[in-house]
Length: 539
Image (tube, rainbow, N blue to C red; front, top):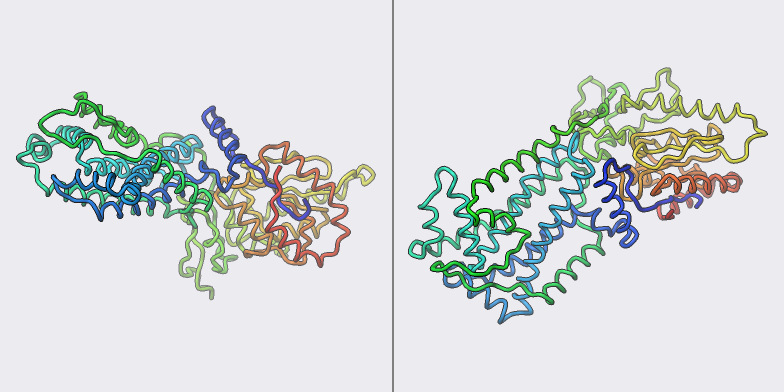
């Protein structure tokens, strides 16, 4: 395990309620089956984008063969299904099942964020911007079923027009245009086709807006999951092709309908004479979802603070901030540097990743007051250095006759599984391990500790999206600021474990191997860095 990272499946946040604990258990179980990168519950957002594009490509193919007329709409869809079952018919089924899966993924994504309370504070924008996507997705699906113009489409036309008829400005005239044979024209289907293209375009725009405050958002699932999704959709389409119901007949009411409950779950309320109730529920649900970030109180740590005297405008904090809270603006203090970092406090997650990226966050600086270009008021780098020095001094003052194992400085994420301090082990907590500058690792080793152990969040579950990944890249020399090549990574371990017991085991194994690592020559550090970037050990 020397010079490697210990990883494991599981969620880093300790669930606070029964629903979160249940979801936590399900995710950990799926990690064991699919692995963290292939776990669909961890990639719901990316999976939603993937399903959207599957539905879009198949929809374009279908639209090329679709007849936008009253007499031709149903016939053209039936021709695709019966005369071209292995091409257009298959694409119709793929379009239907990908759309259904998209609706399921949207709902699961919302519920997952709700259960883990990821909707307030700096996350409010992503939550609020996601609410309209629910209704746009629902409208796109309903419009697609309407275009087929079978018995189900007739039911949809009746329910939707009756639903809107209770609003001011709508009424009998609108119902006649949609439901009376004498006034129904081909222009209606041209309008429906236009809406079925326009609404998904608005949906795509909304999805783009939804991820704007996330740096490097993941919009494509893991390759294995992406291919598996396509294969399952095609196999399901072959096993159970999408079929139309009887053609629409406005002179009679259909006796039986097979509803798609993914999209049409609310329309039976209108059919039962409760359109007003449905409007009330829709408006109330929308307002509740939009207001939720402010209805549920949440504690928030202070935002990052910039010290212009130590900021050289390098932009590393801007590049590494997971939520785009740091922006670069022209210099305001007249110094020669062209730019300065500015923190947008309402976007700041208080993770400290920006401080870990700042080149001034090095404990080797010989200044009277150690301050960095950007740091967290609740966890300043100067205080972290003092805490580390006190811990090392405690190791030096200890009775050497009682020393039974190597001394280790542990840098632990507050959201992960943290080992307990003990003789020879000092634990320093951070908001996120991404806040740890690599120079602190070298400083600790030069100051006399035998090894440095980083206790990060579980693999794939960093509370702040990418803190563990950024630190791993910095330690491996793949990202600035990087750990110097002269540091022997055999004396460094980054652990990502499912529980405290696994973290304790990883720490014990690391300490047991340190005496051998201390005898190795620093010349092997470059090779060790490459191995550190590749290795994955599971606990």
